[in-house]
Length: 164
Image 1: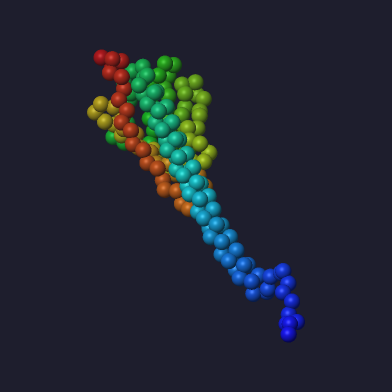
Image 2: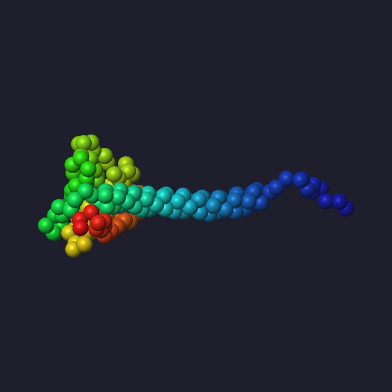
């Protein structure tokens, strides 16, 4: 005797539920992986921006100090600004709030840090042979995950032939 059951080419409800459960797990794992990659890329971009900005600032100050026209009137011990005698007057670097400002002898001011960074500290220290600059930069906006502050210290020695 033949069975009256016919097999249809479709899926049973149990098979569909198992498939949906497994595909949901795969989607969640892939989504978490993509979120981690995205956060890591954002953190790396922010850290790179801090490092690049600090290098550009130190490079600009170094160039000015090395082309000074006379001995630099260093602060007595430490300070938060640097005045460098250059052709046409004095060039000043000073921390104003969270912005490092360069003022040219003509009176024109320029912001040295980018809009994505803030300067948290700018310390100029008088050394025997030059000037030491230490500054700490951080991201301007709160980032998730948090990006640590970046501190750079540089010893800048003026070119000696100018002062001999």
